[in-house]
Figure 1 (cartoon, helix red, strand yellow):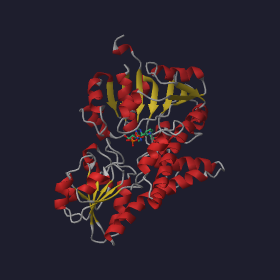
Figure 2: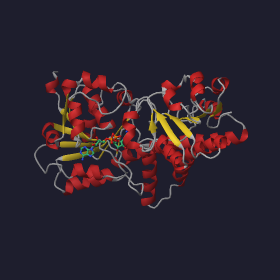
Figure 3: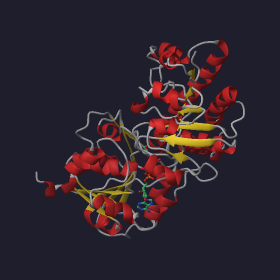
Figure 4: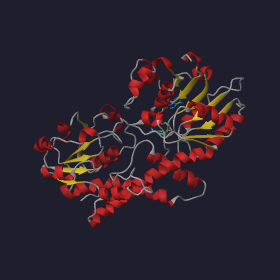
Length: 432
Ligand SMILES: NC(=O)c1ccc[n+]([C@@H]2O[C@H](COP(=O)([O-])OP(=O)(O)OC[C@H]3O[C@@H](n4cnc5c(N)ncnc54)[C@H](O)[C@@H]3O)[C@@H](O)[C@H]2O)c1
């Protein structure tokens, strides 16, 4: 079948999820219309520039260039696509609820009743209940030609292409099994199980999954903190726990807490969803609080060695919220840097990828372009993001240019013996 025989698929909101979704749908053989309100981003994409750092993405866009078009016009989507995905951002409001204003902005521009059938597929993470409300709204506004399907996304930035194309499961929530089937057909060549549910269940699977992973992180962080008190090593403890198949090895890395555009907002949103329906989700309250306190522990560790941080120079290795992404949203580095600046420290930072994106996200930090320039004249180094480049630090050279040989390893990424053998004071999180 030639590509022109394929039905075009629309994607609205070309950020991390939307661009990866559009690219992977093109890779699966579909013509894809990618729409965003950010005209600069669309122009850049038309010229072949990729607005985010995501491994494999530039190559895959190049490979599927003939199947992908970029537009700022919603009308293009409705003209050309029966099925369209919404992947706009749903950031937290000041109360912690998900802000659905971008979703509603799209809704307000949906075309009125016509003889063309459309399927609106929600990829954005939206609170449980949103899909049913939107479905009713579509019917009420006499847009019964538009069906609604919930299809939450589970990809991880840094391995988004791989995750999209090799998912652990595909969740499709719909009122009408026939409509859900149309969306399921897009994934027919994937090996993953397809779970067909009602809409609220699909929405809850997304929140419950992220909240559970965040809970695992806060749990192991608390174990790490107890390990520090009793002389146990959390890395060995986590390994010992992970051998138990009921527990599993993933998400048991103690560190300075979770960040990013998903976990913090989704955990808080689930707590709010529960609260708004009259249920106090006690466990999640603790998960969030533990995560906040965990970032502060690094400051305590620095103070233990340096005393007051006023006029001390602290070098941060890594700014992105995790390796292999340029994303700085809710990154632990930003919280940590703000606290250090608040204590009067001079903060320097280096990140292999996120530096060009950092100027907007963080103010007051001296941005450096390599490891040696960031550690020069610093009183301590804090490893914040476990980039590969930091696995084998040039310890000898670093020691020569630093004021004090102190490394706080916020991700338990370095080999303590090697670091100490090079003459550094080393502290990890919950490690002996
Ligand atoms: N980033 C992740 O790792 C991830 C993973 C799974 C799910 N999600 C969820 O997917 C959704 C998108 O997340 P993201 O990280 O891709 O967000 P993002 O901020 O990277 O991208 C959102 C895009 O939507 C565009 N947009 C906003 N309003 C618009 C409108 N009215 N019309 C068209 N475009 C509009 C923005 O310009 C932006 O390009 C969120 O709900 C998020 O929770 C994210």
